[in-house]
Amino acid sequence: MIQSISAQQMSVADNRNPFIALVEQYFGLDQNLINGAQYYDRYEGCKGVPFFMSIGFMEGDITIKKRLYQDVRIRYDMLSQCVEVEYDFFYGGNSWLVAVTDHIEAFQIGEYHFMKLNLEGPPGKFYQVIRTKRFTCYVHWEKKLSPLQNDPFFTHEFSDPKPTCLLDMDGEINKFKNRKAFAEQFPEHLQKEIKNLFKRNQFKVQRASPNELLLNMNAVGNLLSSGGLP
Image (cartoon, rainbow, N blue to C red; front, side, top):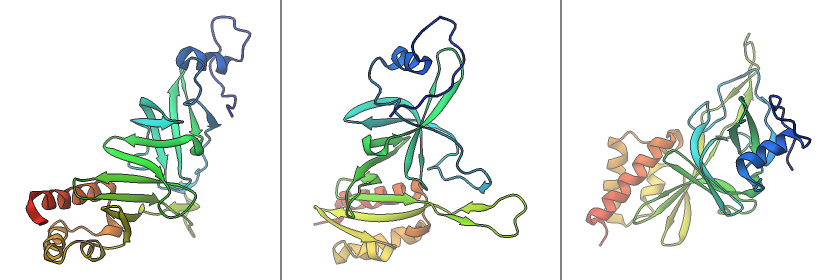
């Protein structure tokens, strides 16, 4: 469903709906990308933000109904598990919409690649995908919203992002909640080396940022590729 979004008055007379005319001008008759609910601020009075990596929109790619859209400004809401799209009107101004989650297959924000996967039972979730030559790590990110008491400015507060991590080794997928559980999924002669690597990096799974998870998973991948496995 495309909802009507207010925009500046068009300077050329057009009997069609102005929003539909603008969509056709920029995207032709293909309305897969500009398709969703009009965005409104659901988090007024909340401390912090629900978004992945940034408060603002970032350049990225998004795949909708098997079509890849590149250089799109998007952001990922880890509370609602929705992806939001920002776009400009030709005659000035911009607007935001919440894309239809069921239509999204993948998206990328900077170096962080996400896919919708059914790894823990239906329905599918968005997982950050970290691929190395020897294994793949899938990370589902969430934030919670909790009420605040005796705060003069805010009624609720967002939690830190919490990861749910899964390791895919040769098609066998298992969860891990800490670095010990991760290391134990590898051959015994490698486990100590992996644990030492994490200790040197002060890496803790449940407290890790997206960047820390990406760096440490790639570090383990490099360790294995350098001759760790027989």
